[in-house]
Amino acid sequence: MRFINSQDIIEKVAAAVIKANTVLPTDVFKAIANALVYEDSLTARNIIEIILQNAHIAESEGMAICQDTGLVVVNVCLGQDVHIVGTSLETAINEGVRIAYKAGYFRNSVVNDPILRVNTNDNTPVIINYQLVSGKELSLTISPKGAGSENMGQLAMLKPLVGLKGVKDFVLEVVKKASANPCPPIIVGVGIGGNMEKAVQLAKGAVLRPINLRNELAYLADFELELLKAINELGIGPQGLGGRTTALAVNVEVFATHIASLPVAVNLSCHATRRVTIRI
Image 1 (cartoon, rainbow, N blue to C red):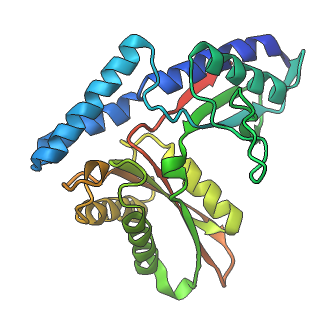
Image 2: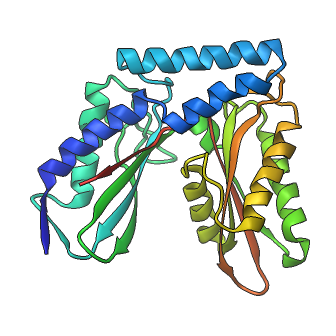
């Protein structure tokens, strides 16, 4: 049995949340910079350069990359031989987020009820997803997600007969409808299979996968590139003002499903895709 003090979790979560909101992941930054190589629209190139400059300023000054510092999602990978002492893991995570949002002067974007809508004033509660594994591991992937991109996600329960073509058509429909709203260039996460909730979980996980990694299944790796090409041919471009850079990557994940089902979920993330993984 491994014992972890909740205070250690609080401190590490707080530091990770501040980093997530101020430092753009290296793979995302490189992909945005690489877009300048093939982007031939002057307007699009200017926007990409501003995005890169914004990322430089945010990191050097310790300021938020985006004014929408999001609703925090924490994906927890918890070893079954780990025991948290002090407060509960959930309490520790929320306290770390609470501290970080105050220390970082980040916008509080969480309301206590979807209808009554009173701001909680500390950006909690956090959404926490748990995965129980063997051993003594405790890792947390922290992802603040803004509403502009999150609001554009969609789920469809397709008929199995439509196959990959039907999936492609749905993904393109979602991206076209989203247009400028998710602040492109975007990352597109696609979840296929499972049931209604599993497809969404797959899409949410896909959007957080490093964008330089393709799916291990060859047919899905090819499908990711096919979708990326088709999306960038839509001409939406950075911030929706035209160009060849609508998406930086398309990540697809699949899971077993019912013989009569083909659930497909699409989750979009803006160019300020924020994620930090910590291991405690």
